[in-house]
Length: 284
Ligand SMILES: [Zn+2]
Ligand SMILES: [Zn+2]
Image 1 (tube, rainbow, N blue to C red):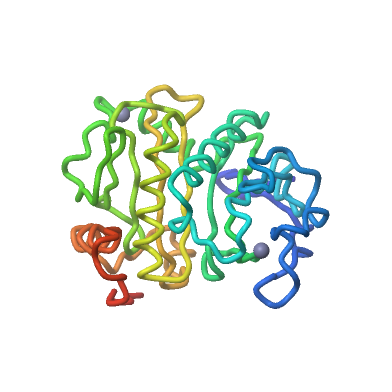
Image 2: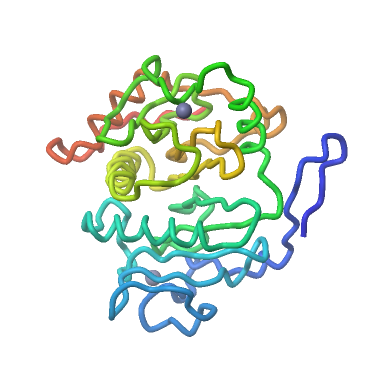
């Protein structure tokens, strides 16, 4: 059910049923592990027999179009620990579901770890389709439409962490959160295209972020209705709770300069370097 805020009429999803979802961190058996398939709604897609990746409707859906992608059968895997072809397959399947869900807008995101809002530790991502375009994509879509030049086609002013043939991984200036990153396609694309290199960069980032915090999020902002938009994935480790100023004002206080963030993330994502235990844990 959608409600609207009183003054600016921003959409709010009201989903009281989600109160019932189990907190598997607190002890109940994991419904995403092999052998517990009957604990989830009927499967939409899977890869492999036995399965490596599995998709099913969210049992506690925030909207009527909500799906869960379990990206590994192994309970303790992290995304960066998957074999590269396995990670690429998980991202490609996510793209397939993104295109298949019949909603006005589909959000793709990952909550990894308790501080990131996950209630189940087993590796998974989510898709949530809505009848409205969420506020951020709507505002940014309008800004792209107004801009004389696309602000993401040329990102040279932003610290670059790494790049592949098709993507740049940057720590954008104006990051709202410490160690925030964007993965941006080099070509002007308003919607999802290449999954394999993206999967690699998501793995590099996951490895780097786990050196900073046990918890991290990523979320994609796409512009299916706005060809002048330029899609990107945003990623950030969860260090500090969002506090009164941020939640109350909508403005963020970032405690890490993106130039420093880029250097640390670049070092930490490199498998030839020692595990990044030495990260400064910096919060508000
Ligand atoms: Zn599990
Ligand atoms: Zn662009």
